[in-house]
Length: 401
Picture (cartoon, rainbow, N blue to C red):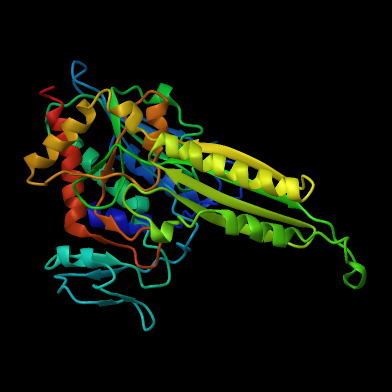
């Protein structure tokens, strides 16, 4: 099966995860994709294939020269809940001409809005039909890893043990919660979960979730004077006191505050924010800002606000910069196939960030996809092939380490 056929097969299987469901996997549909992948791995006759059916994690090993480094590659099964991935109907555009792409009568993929399109003139694009996600995040990574495994299975080339793992619920920040490092005994690893081909990332946000619960006092509207305390209006005061540093007006290494959800009525309102920052000190200051806002309003409104701040993940740069070999190997592999490495920070997080803090250095590699989490998502076939070739070259490079 070639890489395109694999990718199309995977994206046809819905795997949206859900942030409001407190179990792993958060959605049963992720098992459908997992079972398909397990079957493919077994048909390849890999040395070991293990499916944690309870938690929906896949681990597999293609054994090699035991004297060489053991390398791991990881991608995730789920897609973002922000847009549905039910009934994905991909459009395959061969010999792309560099012009706007009509996805449907109402949705156009415009070059002036998405200038990266110009980098794919003459190549094959795979887009959505403008109604769903495509699923390249991260089914492209899965397809590229599977393609790499098949290459080494079919070619008698010296290599060390190659480990692969596919995880659930990465998009809701729980991809490593049940990850079994005992089944993934590698020297280092890579998540294959980035954007442009040639990307390598070993720096990501520090992240926290802020949960605010406001208790108001309801009253009959005709006799509410000096009695009613409207929790929604207190929520509005909180929102207005948060600095205007939001995802929509920040980029590069700028951090932000993001209002993630708001539900409520006069009696009770709940807010949830996300805090993101690359710098650890600034990250701490952002958390302190919420403590100050809530503290001031609790003094004003008789302690009616409950604040909970939970750290989600941390910047893996703090760990990886102590041992850059894993990054250098990827750079050299890219150059070997005439891909110029692009070291870019991740304005988000990956399973690799948390695995790095669990003791396994695990930077992130690009897959060739763009505009993730949206109906404008697309991927370039030639870049998928190149991304898989990078994985192959990483393994080959390690025969000389």
